[in-house]
Image (cartoon, rainbow, N blue to C red; front, side, top):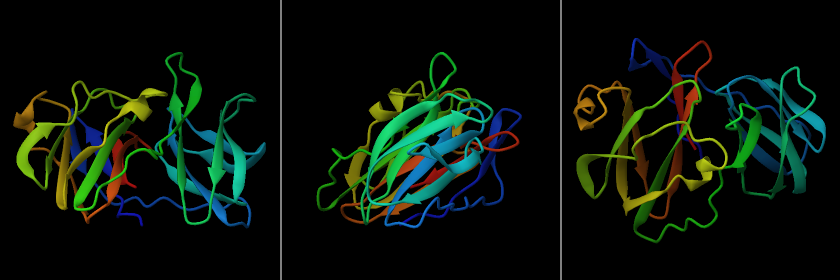
Length: 229
């Protein structure tokens, strides 16, 4: 299940909502497995599966899906125009959708990170939410939340900067009761006083046993966009 995608723009030091931006789905082959790919790199990348281009020129900040046969594969991200990239093993299964991101390493090269969290079990009567800052051009952001069992805005983490490989994997899920989470995002001030005026508001209702991840991504042409997966 995929929640509606919210597109956001960043201008003049503040975040402001704009029109929706739904990613397209590109399937590389006919099959019964699939992998979701997230371009959290600061440029377009070619997505290869087992050495063949599955998604050409995936723009920065875009999420897409490639289909392939069920089983073990190698997914690689290669900057457009380059002959080298970063590969990652992935296993596709019927009824599951693994998520792999192209990220920017500390040396500026493309790297990869698996965003699945198989160890995060949600107990009955509970919900979990995670936020990943995958927008390399956005700088530090202020990300605050309320959750079903606590309605006072609290910081997600501080400082909240771009999460490259492998730090994207260390971002925590927070747990609460069943109900609605709300996440708001702004640049400044660097405290909770920005909650009331934040233009970016992401509302995520969750039922018992559900968990979701909010991706903060670069937007084509400047700014950021948000997608809930």
